[in-house]
Amino acid sequence: MSRRIPHWPPTPAWPSPQQSLLRKVGVVTVTQIIQVAVVHCRSCAWCVSSQRQEVLSGVVVIMSKDTVQHQGISLTMEGSVNLQLSAKSVGVFEAFYNSVKYTLRCDMRRSLLAKDLTKSCEFIIHSSPQKGKLTASPVDFTITPETLQNVKERASLPRFLIRGHLNSTNCIIMQPLTGELVVESSEVAIKSIELQLVRVETCGCAEGYARDATEIQNIQIAEGDICRGLPIPIYMVFPRLFTCPTLETTNFKIEFEVNVVVGLQDDHLITENFPLKLCRM
Image 1 (spheres, rainbow, N blue to C red):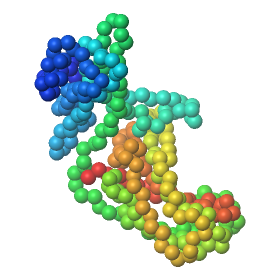
Image 2 (image 1 turned 135 degrees about the vertical axis):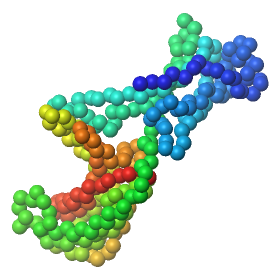
Image 3 (image 1 turned 45 degrees about the vertical axis):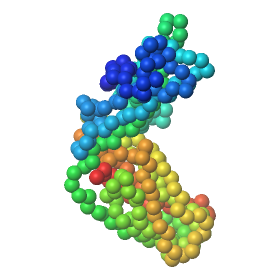
Image 4 (image 1 turned 120 degrees about the horizontal axis):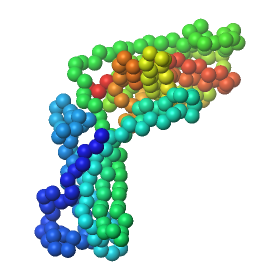
């Protein structure tokens, strides 16, 4: 899918010295900044907001030791979906979220004896804000050897007690995930405490489903054998380029989870998982 912008310049809007020079000889010097046509996504469904339409604008800077002759500058806006097979699992596609890209390409046409010049720039599209009011969903948690899942030898685990809370697992994507964690007791010294943000993509049909989990951010919130009973703040800003509002359809889902990971000095790793729902309001 692409939208082609008419050849430059559709309506010259430069100061008179530049305009006069371009009209007479069609030459651009090294010191000139050429303002190209503004890309206005008037008919583009990707950029349409519920409140206003977005404008993608800027300038093209041409740098050369000598004068540059050309036969026109054009802009092309493209949207592409490029699915690649995963090297981890046979028959499974790599991260679906990273496969959709939008680019703006600038082309300078030159004579037959000179090669055309092309430069591309990727840009990000935000979905329209969701209507309605987000309801907070605070979560209190307690981590002990008894609450852990998928443990084969529970009796060999050291004794520990970790309490905490997340202010809400329903999150506005432009606001941080916040909360608090307290290590009440631990028989073994603590090495570190981390927050791990995971994006989970699921795609499938009647034949089955493919699930791909990708760690997109890891933040250390504590290091060393921290004081017992000391509140440790939980504060995570969602990475803009790797997150999006939670999406769930019949055959495709994009979900997010956060893991609280506690590493002990005896190399035991304690993990507690919390599903998140991200919204854009």
